[in-house]
Image (cartoon, rainbow, N blue to C red):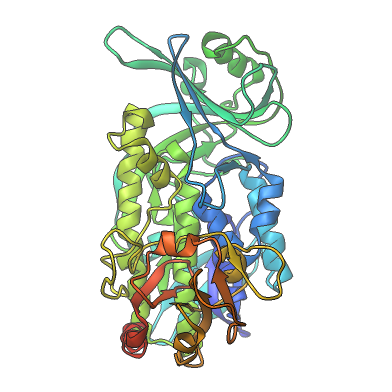
Length: 546
């Protein structure tokens, strides 16, 4: 190991979280390497739900259309109890939300992300496992095991552990991973069903005993392809009684002796046959159905755990390495992708010398409360069902869509300004439609205008061009003018648009001429009157450089 290779950021784990971190880092011009212990992507439909907020983040990368074209819509869920329809939940969102809920097998999500990252010059290094690491004041030294059986030493400024529930990075940091496992075991299968249920709806069918306990369960999520579903159900006794083989190479999530029982297990005689799936469908399906064309099946366990901190020095954990929980509501992968995007833009600023290292402490401060909330909520929903959530249906849908994730109490959040119920610093920056430009002959969405931008964007809402043109945001902030609908017609100075439909004003509720600083992850960093722009930007930059 005489020749030590160097990089800015080393990412362990090439699942959706690690790939999203690599995508955002490379988009921001940061050198990185991404390694994965597996020789190839696993062909398993594990995480399948794509939340609207994740699609918004991918839209900023220019990746959303690719994902949408590959996915299928999730329009709602049909809930059956003891053979009778008990509820029909429509996944309805306000019209200003640009994307709906979608389903895509994890192997397809990974393939598309991997192609995107490779297009930015960073291929996944497969059959390459992080064995150990040490860190000092200046960086991290990592030891990698390679496909040839040899070892390689890598020197990186930072290390991100996106290496799953059995994370080597988490263990190397000595992080607590408190929680427990659910006692039940489940079967998971990717199959085709010939029933006539409505397209785009998930199915949750339960049998309940007289005392209200659920003793039989079938959950089906639609997948691309005619009649395809990822089905999950309780394991029958003949499979539950057979222990998994921890040394089986077909096992995608080996326990590795760490006591974390989470994810699929394969081999050891525990692979469900099509007959096992059919037996549950015969008992619980709301329509008579035959299942066929099984691509994959497994037994899996569910745990709920979260680390005591998301970082230690120059090393970070994200996704399942930091938090695991029931798959209810498809929150896990999406929460991990948001972890990755939150961390990546901050690392990019620090690597480029545009912010101080203290900025990286805001990753734990912002994301760990989100992880704690998701773990608690998914455990409640797994136990009592999403239909038992006490909040109003719209709030439930917005939260499941991850559109309510915010950092109002975070260390980077500026003071509030304007109406209390308007989007404030820390909140998601809403999308809106109806923005027009002098040349474009069609209205644009705000997402269209932000797409491809890598840094902070300052939106200046003004009644005339003179107000906006007088603002000096400095060289590191991109400025976009949004003229009020009633403003006199004139060509904007610089990148500018008119709020022709009044949607920007309706959703952002500016208090007169107002500035909105949008972070690279699509959250509002600051909101202020235009005549206070210099002071607001100075305070925000001070927070970044503290």
